[in-house]
Image 1 (cartoon, rainbow, N blue to C red):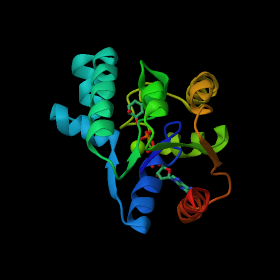
Image 2: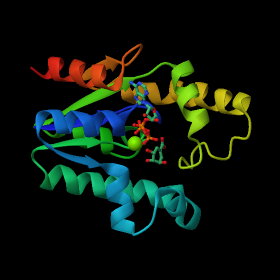
Image 3: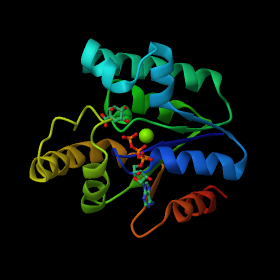
Image 4: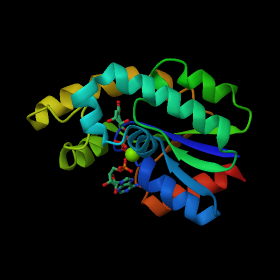
Length: 173
Ligand SMILES: Nc1ncnc2c1ncn2[C@@H]1O[C@H](COP(=O)(O)OP(=O)(O)OP(=O)(O)O)[C@@H](O)[C@H]1O
Ligand SMILES: O=C(O)C1=C[C@@H](O)[C@@H](O)[C@H](O)C1
Ligand SMILES: [Mg+2]
């Protein structure tokens, strides 16, 4: 099975995905990391040097490769992955994939993201907490249309990473 984690930036896809993979003894992959490896540079540099449209194209290509080649994997998507191109449909059409939305509320996302903006080129330019809040509120609303099409929607509210991992394991039983 391919367990695919989706959700806004800061929702915990990477930390939860790594921990879940370890718990159930399955290979872990992070789409952002795979794109970085493929391109030989980190995500902020890809955005800076080649632009977001180029990044989105690579994101779709790398996702397609992983879906084709890796049959047993926990895969953390990037925050925007299901919202671009054919990515969401590709995942829905893949019979072995189960797509899980880590649903984290706006205030918690803001708490996390205000500490960790620099490695996230979509928000790194937002200078103040107010600017970040304005942006994320609207962006999360727009993206929720895509996230909510996931097979499993899991609220992370009040849950530690371990509790999120346990909740996913329960849902998958
Ligand atoms: N359930 C949780 N409880 C407390 N902290 C959490 C939880 N989930 C994630 N975090 C923290 O929030 C931050 C963001 O998590 P993470 O990098 O895994 O998000 P992400 O969804 O992979 O983001 P991106 O889309 O930008 O890659 C990290 O510092 C992480 O430790
Ligand atoms: O939400 C987004 O659009 C992004 C999230 C990150 O995971 C990276 O995929 C990249 O920084 C874009
Ligand atoms: Mg991540």
